[in-house]
Image 1 (cartoon, rainbow, N blue to C red):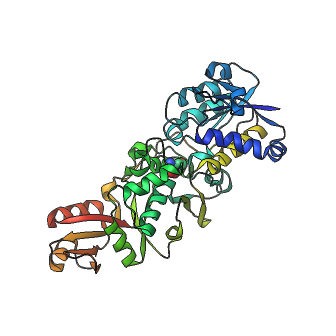
Image 2 (tube, rainbow, N blue to C red):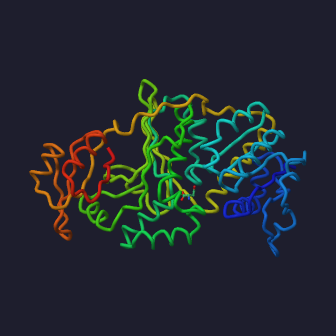
Image 3 (cartoon, helix red, strand yellow):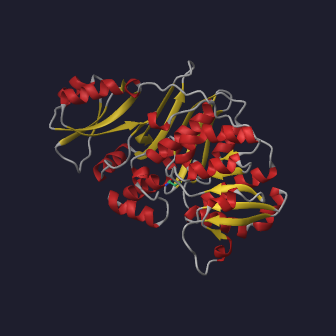
Length: 404
Ligand code: HSE
């Protein structure tokens, strides 16, 4: 019997209990022993729910119980999640989590404690919901030099952009629907302003490039400013607007990382990633291109990834599995120096004035239902050059980068 404790009985925590109950026999077979939920920690009571029998309110009960082998942290947020995870590892218990905020900030520290204590700290569910991307980067792709990771890493915003495109709904309506479906964070600003995606790209990049990417340093824009008019232009150009999280590592080791809405061409595999789905595109020097696709948020897909970690930790009790996440901080390129093509909507300017600002080689896009403005795709330029040109010409309504 392998005893686990689940910290938090919210959306993911109740999903973890449900996955273990539903697939009990198969999970036990794969883990090599029966997995038993000995404790669920939550401040609330759940009268009538069978979880009430194993509910505790004090983490000391779990930390001090030598029978608990694995602690599942699914509370979210920094504290007390970080303190509980740390104490569990220090007590010689393996920990797994879906908490990307905690992993992005404290991953290196918690991995180091796990290594010292000869246990494991796993976080498959922290990126891409049910998509097995961490395990792929940390195991299957270790023979490769990975130089690019790009993905749709936030299910809430992908769902919202999808609804805005197909239903013509506005930002507020789409957000409300995403919250009702249980996709969004407790504070949805983390989703819509891109912070959730930036934590995830920092985690994936840390493993892909074998260093430590500080999420706080990743230049980030969310989707708040995307309007129905932007959607019309995207349709006109045969492209779709996606919130992408992208990173590259140059041969000199310096990385470029960015989270922002992008216009994606129909030929790009990320074009067809709709609804709450996530996808992670990886390029390796031997592998070439690979893409991982699946449910990016939601109770059971996320819980499935958490329980996969529980099973692996059960298979390797007191045997540390190395993680490719390195301690050395990855140097990030100045975002102003990153180049791109930009789609810009400008009001009250002639084509000559636009070309004078953004350069010859502008491609003009007209959207018949929108008058008094001009859509333009600029030549390739750095962000610094773009912002200088936009300031010079004035009248810019909006800008969206175009994915290569
Ligand atoms: N709020 C997150 C999302 C949940 O929408 O992707 C999964 O991390």
